Image (cartoon, rainbow, N blue to C red; front, top):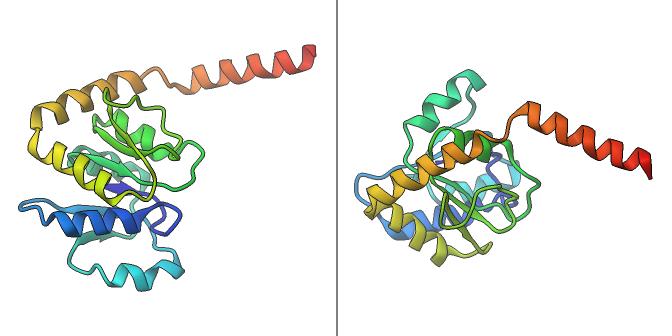
Length: 168
């Protein structure tokens, strides 16, 4: 599954191409979010490769995460996307790019791959497709790890940063 604006910057083209080439039986690529206008012609070339949910209320998103097997976020440029935290909290193993800004740890919670790399995407998707035990272990580890990232912790750390700036 992928959640985020469906477009070039999010690396969705590479995910679509990887999934198309894999031709996995009993597997579905779910894309959740609106589509960038400029990306619509590209997305149209992949009809039948994916399922698309245009929009979901935030309250319904956890159920979609929990009914998925793997979260893929192949972004070309990102800060630290909230959806990666949500996916981890739902116990999903991750496949993210080195530019995704994710806090996940490579080979512990999933895999960090280079941007624009269809072969790496295929390799890691296939790994999770064929290894249910690893998928479960990495997903559980991701869920445990991300529990440390609370709003309380965020506010406390932000306050510390501001205090250090003020002292200087």
